[in-house]
Structures are given as structure tokens and as C-alpha cells.
Image 1 (cartoon, rainbow, N blue to C red):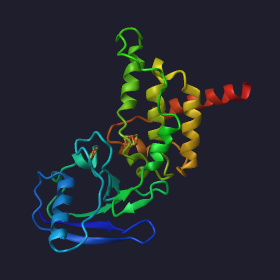
Image 2 (image 1 turned 90 degrees about the horizontal axis):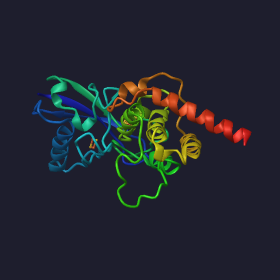
Image 3 (image 1 turned 180 degrees about the vertical axis):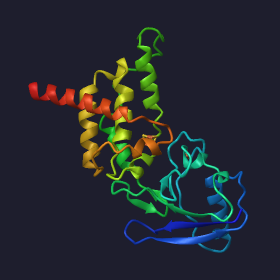
Image 4 (image 1 turned 45 degrees about the horizontal axis):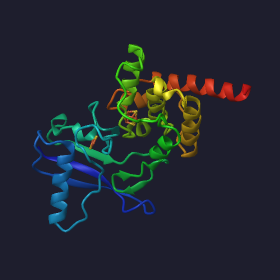
Length: 249
Ligand code: SF4
Ligand code: FES
């Protein structure tokens, strides 16, 4: 296939960026999207130009490192991560606009790479448990209702990619934050810090400059792991409970 990619090029956060067009003449439909970018970078390097910076690690849809906006859609036209997207999803002659996540809380580092340290700081504000680990506990010593185990597992599949933020008109990270709160809050081991977790993580979410949730739902539509909107309802229930206890206490 012959395709043209319009790629966002930006040296760093303090200079303006621009879209630059690159024609590619021999793109196989079996290439992954990132392999197509690898081919572009090989071409740029041979020509003596600066290769396009983009984030990636596992290339298996599990680490959450990759992620670009393709023709206006975070992770592109399929419900998957950018690394699991293949060029067979596009056609000969296509023109693809490739941009970084656009959000004030995700400043551009270079080209398609953004700084998602804000997600790390939200996790540091409560996305953990403090139960002593010791040796491996007997699996049936702590019974977990099946529904809770299933929902906790579903929420735990969030890979922290940030597509939900890029898709949200408010630049909200509520789906990500709520997935972490739901994952830990539904398990017995997560009860000790349940209130401090939701208070701390929501406070950090807001301090990082992410917007509020107005139930638009673009986040869940863009999420490669299908994290459902009802995790945000769980977050709101937990937050209300924690604030009520704080007020009464
Ligand atoms: S909720 Fe979905 S889109 Fe958001 S960070 Fe987690 S996996 Fe990515
Ligand atoms: S590179 Fe790990 S999820 Fe895409």
C-alpha cells in the first residue's frame, strides 16, 4: 500500500509543533502500526533526518506505553492499543493524521511522546494496599464473592495508557482513577485504605489539572480494555461515603 502519514513533530514542550507529511510507498497490511512507524524512522534515519519519537514497550497490549491519536481517534479505528493495531485496518491511498495525546496534564515531551507522570502521582496518592505480604497466603483463606472478584479483575485490566483522557472533551482521567479505586475497593485486602484512597486519588486527579467527568462516555468508547463507565459510579459512591464519614467524624 501507498499511504501518507501526517505526523506531529515537536522538539520539546517549549517550542511550537507542526504536522509534517511523509509518503510511504511500501506498507504491508501485515505490519503493525508501530512497525509502519519503524519503517518511517528507518527511512528518516537513512536520509539524515531526526526519527519520530513515539512511546512503546511490550507491543503486546499489556504495558500501556504506546498510544497516539490516529485520524482523531485515540489508538485509531479498532478497539485495541496502538501496538496491536495493524495496517490492514487501512487502505491503499489513505492519509493518516498521527498526533500525541492532547491534554494539559500530559505535556508533550517530544513528537508523539507525552509525559504521563500525572498518572503515576495519582497512583502514589492511594493506588496500593499496605497489608503485610509475608509468605503466599492460602488461596481460600480470604473468601471473595464471585461478583466482586469478577468486577475487580475487570477494573484491574486498565493498563494506564491514557486514551480515556485523550478522548474526553473535559480532559478527565476519571475512568483511569475509578478503575484503580474499583479494583482495590472491591477486594478484602483493599478495605483498610478504602476511604483515604478515594480521597487522596481524587484530590491528586484534580491537582494534576484533569477535568471533571460529565458522563459523556467517550473515555469508555476509546478504552482498549473496555473499562466500563460504572467504575466511575463506584468511585462516586466511595467518595460520597468517605466525605460523609469525614464530615460526621
Ligand atoms: S481506563 Fe482504559 S483508556 Fe483509560 S488508562 Fe485505563 S486502559 Fe487506558
Ligand atoms: S507497547 Fe505495551 S501496550 Fe502498546
